[in-house]
Image 1 (cartoon, rainbow over the protein chains, first blue to last red):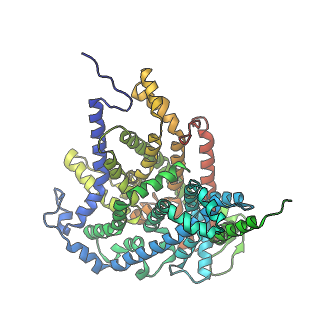
Image 2: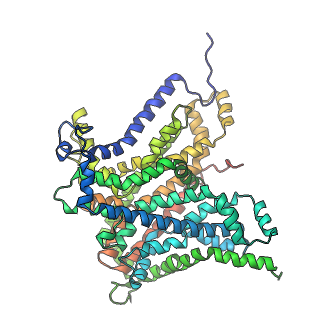
Image 3: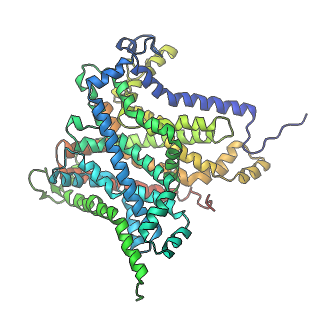
Length: 284
Length: 300
């Protein structure tokens, strides 16, 4: 009998089975926490502490989701997170793309040095600039408002500049020349050529920025002190304060509300999430 | 000197206009604050009265501050465990996902999706999963194996390992970077190795590992830097406890600056953190010179 030969990449049946078992077990492990969050959020308080464990509650408690909006200003938190994330993402992506365009396409004295500065600021931990920034915003009487969180977003981010510049370097220069011959300015070039061609770069940068803004606790924690102004991250931290013992079913419902918008967006724009992470990883 | 043409001048002007938002931000929110932070670290400043110069007192006090050492130690302990944990887990998953199997893209999604959410909600989730009395992990340990589970976040010995374990579901973002690197490796190398009779393990050690070593280094440095700045998990789950065993460096800095309003002392803490991160990055880059294989460029 002829022995089957395996070319590169092909797995023997036994190996294939092993890979499937390992990956399957791992996948269950990775998906389980979110499943448990959902399951807990739909339980009654009695189900939570029941022995043996209740995997899927017999009576689904949708009312928990109503309850959290009554017990805490979840609607406020949600709205705050949405507008705050939205406005900072727009600000960062637009200003970063402008700078990225300049660094990728224009010749100017000192541009290499300035781009070096952009890169070097990525190395500095945010804690170093944190205190002077706080003192500045405190002097301006901006603490307690969203201004310290929103305004700096409109001054680009080093990482996003880097990411978008990589993309712009790959766009053909022939179109630039065409605009130049027609007497168009760099602004025409930016708006007519670059922006339409770089939708994937915008999407990728926007999604990375959105993830970090939506999940961020530190910024809101330092600058906001009025409960009505809290975004979800900070609202959630204070969620249990009103109860005696931690109401896990409600806390998990609130946590799910806090992560659901990101998960929904992920579902539709998966490609850009993964692309963003990969570009930021492989080009760094 | 060569005179600039009209067009070059126009281009230069446009350049400055386009980078203006970044430049303003750099001066006001980055460059300026770095200088101010350095100066503040040599002062005593409580926000209300004006800062007074005290020389290197903040630094010398820090080196005698028991809590400073405790927070640094706890942070390094976390870092030393979480970096290898993240790198190894994500590399193993990436290697398995890189095999020719069905359902690859679905599996990739399952592994990656949990990593997009982080912060407060995820911290609460793990706090619930690892709840000593009612958490699912300890319940299963008891029901299936008859083991009485540990106290996880509530015990001094297990609090940091528990926070490392939390990073499991966050490893998806590192995993996709490895996966991308693995997929860009040239198949012909493996084919010629197969002809030479090399087994899977030999191929991994002799080809894969050296080829992706720059990516391993990159991921190691990135996760090391992130681990040294860990904060949210401890703030949400343990408040730094029990007994300061999850009182991470940035948590102490946060308390110094925003609970005690000792801005000078906190600035000194920030600078020491900066120096530690910088030094560790340089050391890893130098130490890796021997192991890293840079000849291969996927773009060529």
